Image 1 (cartoon, one colour):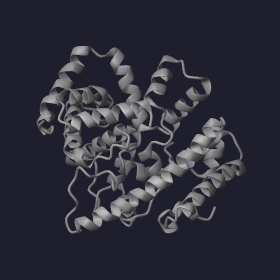
Image 2: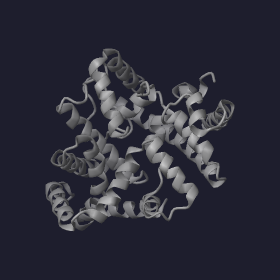
Image 3: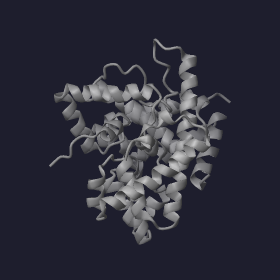
Length: 216
Length: 135
């Protein structure tokens, strides 16, 4: 655990004990980045401050369910994103989606009650299982990225980030990074092979990770 | 010219994780194209069915985000060249919304009048402290 995570974890412990000073410290530590995140979308300071305020309340009300091993900043950003989405829907900027029965934040929405029409216990079980699968795959990706970073293979990090985070096709990635399409394909193959090995080792179901088994 | 919208863009849109200008472009497209709305709903349905996407996990777990300390060093221009080049890429090309927010905050902290921030923080505290567990 990094020093920042340890410090956040200690702060959360004090807040769970009801320490007002710790809560004040958390607000001071995180409100600026949350405000910048939200305001970049609302383009309105007052509305952004309201959304951040709701996010802080969301954190306190969900604290009993918060897993202290998770990074606090990521959790706060996900609550803020959720509150921001609600705000933008009310403003008519984000469309309501048809046939989307549950939240878009399957692993992080413990601050919201389960959707109607589904049995809460089944949602809880499936969330738990999905979280285990997600954590296993994230650990495998982190391990590979750390390995490349330690070796100074930044080109490989950039390559797989463009392929999987931005979803760029091989040709565009090759042009952007000034490498051949074959080199892009090799980096992609190496990354996916490592992940497939991790999935196999941990006996995870293959069919829930379709990208790992797509034809290259 | 604008790039065509890809499934990964729509995934990131659902998670409120794209840069604001990209989010606005997608919202504009959604207003004009019912098929795109159905595509978004289909992504949600796949998530409900328990399918994972590497990009969504990567973003949620922030697998390639520099630390806040590294972003501070980047602003001060004291990050090693190789890492600084990567941060440029992560911010400008990948467009990481969380790192952009952190950078904006670090810049604002130097520029903002301390009293303004103090007033805002007091307001957050007063509106939320009632939810703290009683000792």
